[in-house]
Amino acid sequence: MQKLSLKQSLTQKLSPQQIQFIKLLQVPTAELESRIEKELEDNPALEEGADQEEFAEEPSQDDTQDYDEGGDDDYVEPAANSEDEIDIGDYYQEDYSGYKMRGDGPNPDEDDKVIPIEAASSLLERMENQIGFQELDERGQSIAKQIIGSLDTDGYLRRDLDAISNDLAFSQGIETSADEIEEILKVVQDLDPPGVGARTLKECLLIQLYRMDPDPVVRKAIDLLEYCFNEFTKKHYEKIEKKLNIDDEELKEVMSLITKLNPKPGGSTSANKEVNPYLMPDFIVNNDNGQLEIQLNSKNAPELKVSRSYADMLDAYDKDKGKNKELKKTVSFVKQKLDSAKWFIDAIKQRQDTLLKTMRAIVELQYDFFLEGDEADLRPMILKDVAEKIGMDISTVSRVANSKAVQTEFGIFPLKFFFSEGIATESGEDVSNKEVKQALKKLIEEEDKHKPLSDDKLEKLLKDEGYLIARRTVAKYREQMGLPVARLRKEI
Image 1 (cartoon, one colour):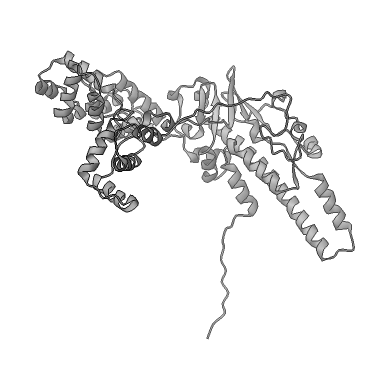
Image 2 (cartoon, helix red, strand yellow):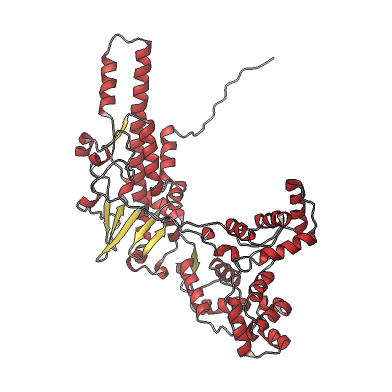
């Protein structure tokens, strides 16, 4: 027999408005325009332009704040910048124009600009084109193309030859052996760029050397890689000199030649070059004679309003006494769109407010850095410090810090750059680990490269400078900065 019972529980659920705000908060400035454009397309009750009634009552959202070194809340509103003002009429020249989209309809104030795009071919395409000029029959061409298709992006062949043989049997019905594939691989390795098709770093460097004129230095470099590769990777120069019977000067010439070789031949093609994306700043911080002025990127403060025609339409429907079923559906639809438009505008305004509060707190906590731009002036700061200062949750600060950037007089920095743990000093003061990293980097740059400093020695030198740090922490910071161990930093 089933029993009925009552149970009381307390749960926390986010409202649709809160979810919308959270999603908008973590959207970077570069993507905000497309997000607003989509909302304008989906919701006819949302329009571009400032609401005249609200605009007359409320202050501008393009807040600016000045900081004095001792003031936490001394905010000053600057005059509006006419260059940032947008004439909405420019975007209504066509009915189908999107939200502030470049190229939407004719604009006499803008010149037609074409961004050139580099025409580039991939490594696979370049090599397949070269295979057509080699003296290979149809079977050899198929095997060569299978080998080329198995190359990694850096140009190395890390797939086993037996596995390539199985691929040829299953995909093309070609029965072959590892020995035959090895012969075709030699043909592939003769293609450009030099070193492509190698299976190891040693083979890659040797391929490049064998394609050079065999002068004495090249022959010694080949001998070094053939017979002393293990010593070469560990920089045991004394053992290399003893094995090859050469002196320091000869070894310097050989090492100079080898270090000029390309260890990743596949990365030399233009199609494989990494393109650094443009980092659009969300904030701009300027130093005006010791006063730090914070501005929110104008793209974060779009002019949006609720459609007046939709609002009038809803009023007219509400006053209609003879409501039928279809009219009620229409009223419900219009009201839903109007509420959605209001929620979106409120979420955008709340986003602007949260961004400014977070940036103000960061500038206050890292005031010295924003004045001089010296990493040594960075103070230890974690998400909790900012969250407590602005009275918000740590997750909110995290969403802002992980996707936003600030433009300063010293460059553009992601906000997470300003967050770091603290390291204690002999005086009992906490300093940012970025300051310790800079001190560590300076010690390594100034060391004697013939006798590089070990991590133990670096630990002692840092303690002499007042930083209380363990050897394992020195090793961790060194690895984070991409600096090798002492043995690999040794030079002849």
